[in-house]
Amino acid sequence: MSTKKRLTAEIYAAIPALIEEGKSKIEIAEIYGVTKDTLQVQCSRRGISLRKGGARPPRVTLSLPTPLTLSTKALLALSAAAKAYGTDEVRLASKLLETIAKDNLYEAVLDTSKEPIAA
Image 1 (cartoon, one colour):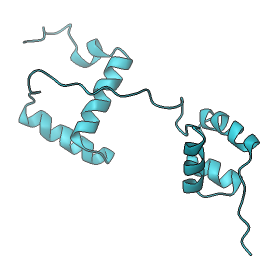
Image 2 (cartoon, one colour; image 1 turned 90 degrees about the horizontal axis):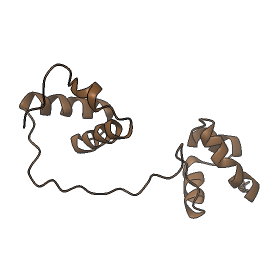
Image 3 (spheres, one colour; image 1 turned 90 degrees about the vertical axis):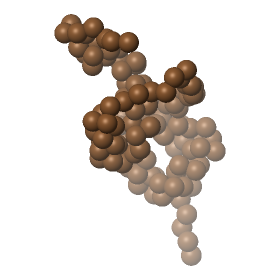
């Protein structure tokens, strides 16, 4: 006889607080005796985000008027970093730009005190 665990309304109500405390999906699933996949599917059906900070804001696709030009050295470094992070170059570049914009890191990244940005 199978003993399936039931996730109750009280459990669903507690999940966002556990996420904010830093608990992972796997840890939360273990606490309540369900699989990570069950937790993920059931929370998705109820609109409960399992991401710290809540659901991601909607993404906007940016179309650049000209192609983005990078040196071969930069492309190789980006490719190696993407591989190390288990992602692709486009996703990594997007994440880097998001972080720079969100945290206003332009001066730190560009070190504009040393040289002007060429067109």
